[in-house]
Amino acid sequence: MQDVLNDALVKIRNADSSGVPEVRVAPVSNTVGAVLGILKENGYVGEFTLEANGKGGAYRVSLVRRINYCGVIKPRLSVGVRDLERFEARFLPAQDFGLLILSTNSGIMTQMKAREIGAGGRLIAYVY
Image 1: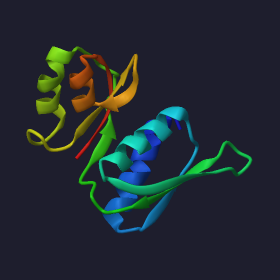
Image 2: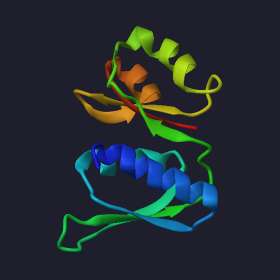
Image 3: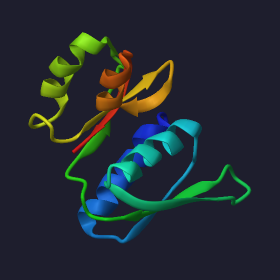
Image 4: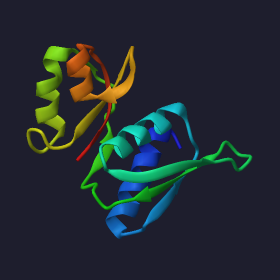
């Protein structure tokens, strides 16, 4: 395990494509929790809960079968507000379809919210 976020998104993508109703994602981190929160807000996953297991915990995520593909962006590319459209075209299949997830000074958020508040940051993941 090198990248906790990548491992979590791969588990979610594989479970969603195979039709499993819920998946257990471990180990956990604050970044994984924030990304799961964004996915839940936008309807890509259902409820998720943190389970303490004495080994760092695990998230139990219920899936709603809405993810076509998701992944992390490596290396973490710096992006300004004006460059968001270019990276949307690069990582997402169509305009207004899917999400880019950024890490900004104001926290982890989608490209739409970053554009609203005028904040740039580093691209960490995408989902559609």
